Image 1 (tube, rainbow, N blue to C red):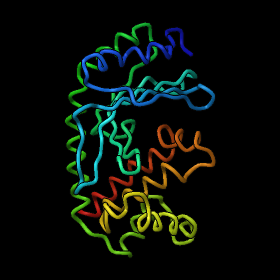
Image 2: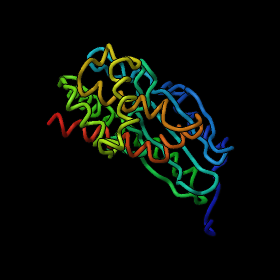
Image 3: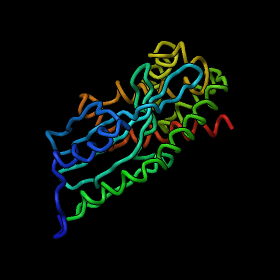
Length: 233
């Protein structure tokens, strides 16, 4: 760590949410840690802020995460979560629309987080812009050939590399949580990928969530939305 490094204690991270709770802007959803406490996170649900994609509900959340090992800066931002299967979609950490703000570990870290709260309305607008992107995906049907091509591009695999992966994602497209709502659309294809990343990639739940929020799965999740939007266009 550098000389200016100042840790953000867990109680300080939780206290940052208190004004949001007091004003009724958000409710505390859950909090937890990864890698034996090396990384901690707090998730709050934004009240009176949700979107619907052809009846498929997506809620708005505030995410704060921090690493006590100094591997990442303090991060605060918005992230959408699909309610029917509680899938984290394109994470705030990797989405330009979320307007995620990062704060260095310095003696002013808590004050900086307080300033972030005052401009979170910018991220709220990004959430609704993202909902419009989701609706665009839901309006476009996808055939089997394009579905397979989409999965291969998202995971950057060829025919041989996708032998094990492809059947799993295609199964989720047909039978995954909320697949009957999403239908045979690019929205359904995108959600098949995110469900796989949320629940089936990683040997343990800890590894799955760590990858989804901080590692390779986060990159894949962001690419899944980008590729779907390009294919629709």
